[in-house]
Image 1 (cartoon, rainbow, N blue to C red):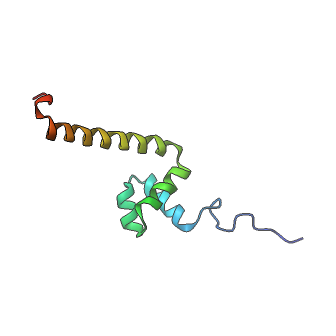
Image 2: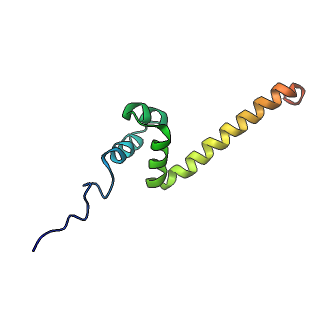
Image 3: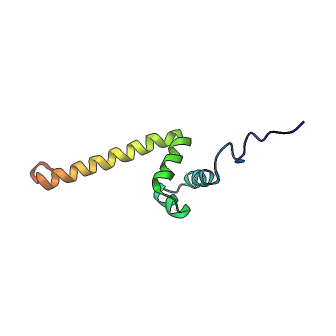
Amino acid sequence: MSCINIDPHGHGGLTALEVAILAEWDGGLSVKRIALKLNCPPRRVESTISNYDGKADHAFAVRDAKQGSAQLLAAIARHHPERIAA
């Protein structure tokens, strides 16, 4: 009887790059630092993390909301400085 390799990648179906991305993420590196270290696009890093780490979706949403709020506050400060409390 022959064996069938149901896990050709050797890591639960993950590619070597996906394993490396997730290891760096688990180690505490940011998306940008992982992308630089592994020489791959930040969007690839972010999508891999999002696919395999359910908590990441919430973290990315919080980050995006903070960035959006900061941009809105900066625009208000530029165009209506009188509305920004000192």
